[in-house]
Image 1 (cartoon, rainbow, N blue to C red):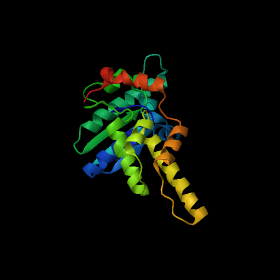
Image 2 (cartoon, one colour):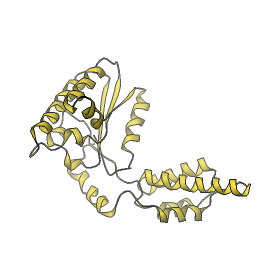
Image 3 (tube, rainbow, N blue to C red):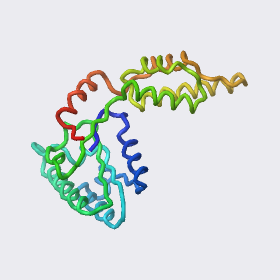
Image 4 (cartoon, one colour):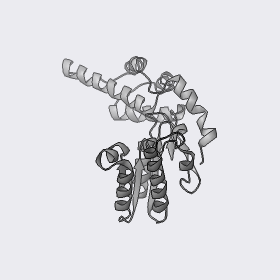
Amino acid sequence: MLFGPPGTGKSTFAHAIADRLGWPFLDLFPARLAAEYGLATGLNRRFDEISQLDHALVFIDEVEEAAGERIGADATAVGIVNELLKAIVRFRSRDGRLLVCATNNVTTLDPAFLRHGRFDYVVPLGPPDQQARAALWESFLTRAGAQADVSALVSASEGFTPADIGHAARTVSQSAFERTIDTGARTRPATDDYLDTIRSTHATVSPAVAKEFAEQPERFARI
């Protein structure tokens, strides 16, 4: 179970696990299942189909749509959570299976969903620290063939998610490409180009959301 603010790399984390295992990655979308079959029926159908595979990593993003708090919910919502809990038990009964779920707000999940026996690990994924931001910037700079002061970019992008950093890096690369087209001479991005773009990039995670998330690992994390 992965939890953290939007853009912090939960889907990427799940894909990386599947790649490391060499297993098929199957993405289940609660909203799509609800539209096609009704969510409870759709979940049962998909898990029954998955049971025919030898190996599979199943990923459910925004799992709160299927596993929200049952207290105060209507009968339909309660039924959906009950069906998902039963499906997880069946799923775990066979080897060669891994279920990875993700949510932007772990506090909205039904407590029974997070109990031992359903998920072995409950992992928080927050905005990257300085070391992680440095690695991200170095990766993007290498791809762009750019030379910039990584430490300056790391400091300026405090609170940025991987998605925010990726957006800023691609914006700079696009601007450099357009200048190359206009002038006919290849333009390499520099530190100031990145810093200007960082300043104009709206961070996905607000200070309020970051503060709320900082309090959640102690309550929910199980690593």
